[in-house]
Length: 123
Image 1 (cartoon, rainbow, N blue to C red):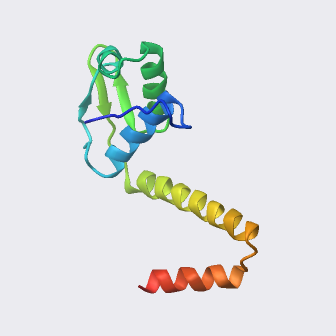
Image 2: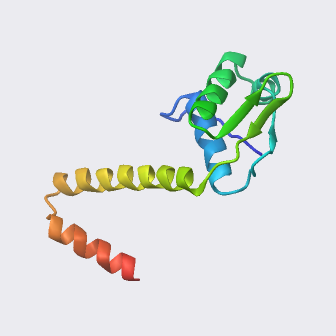
Image 3: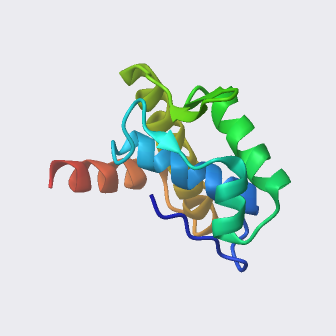
């Protein structure tokens, strides 16, 4: 697993970690049961604060993507397809909101947006 931190990103460092680990799990690059680096090891590898990696891991645990087992390590959680579906639906909704905002700026109608969508969707 390779995590790349960008200091020029608008996303916080812990958010970048969360997003990259989530994407690796959703894409099945990291499988259920995979042992993640310890908080300290990840912090050292990324040259960032232990508090930042701890916060990222806590967020991933809260969202159900990882399990933190005291004394044993941090593992990719076993999860259902529902979690993946919900994450991807949130991503789609955000992109649609962005499209709507742009279309309003340049005064593109809903019908035109739907027509563009249908053309692209049908190939």
